[in-house]
Length: 237
Ligand SMILES: Nc1ncnc2c1ncn2[C@@H]1O[C@H](COP(=O)(O)OP(=O)(O)OP(=O)(O)O)[C@@H](O)[C@H]1O
Image (cartoon, rainbow, N blue to C red; front, side, top):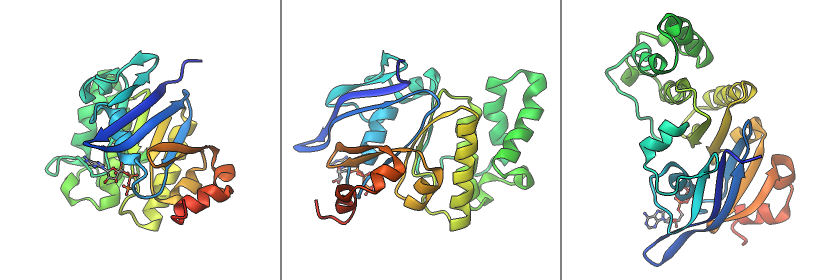
């Protein structure tokens, strides 16, 4: 099976600093993967290479078998990669409903728009805020609105950068439930995340980065039981 997303020997350096150092990575269709690692491991830089915000210094990124290493970010979205950045990128003066209309119109037939918007509002716990301007939403609801916009495009792959950064425990749990529901619907999801409670809740395959390389890869429970993984989090390696 061709992986939906694959990197081979992916490298990125800034001046003399090699930040991503030969990452081989693959996600198959239908999989949910959390990319974790201690501070400075190279997670954000890796994410930016996947979405096209950085060009690799060496190696490649392939999406559904096609080399996209030099494809611009908006063209990657056109190919079916949908991206949710760490900082909410919504329009403060547009309502929740207006945001959803922007994306839903692009993917469903006119007579299906209203039902699809209702489905999204329910799924993302935004029904009671449909007429609220996005700028007035809580931080958690801003994050969900942005995830809903990324999902509303019906992507082949959803990429999330720290979706629970700054969220309360309750909001984090709700986001975890949301990811599990999207996974159950068959969406392929890659999440870069710091918050281990969230990663445990989602409970998927994980890839641990350390020093710009893949340090460990596999089912969450197995990976977290490894002494060497504990050591990198404690700064002993
Ligand atoms: N544009 C840049 N220029 C120079 N160095 C950079 C640049 N971007 C990142 N780095 C360095 O690369 C290393 C990895 O950074 P990166 O943000 O990718 O790690 P991270 O795993 O996401 O860290 P954190 O969990 O703290 O966000 C850090 O030492 C960082 O200072």
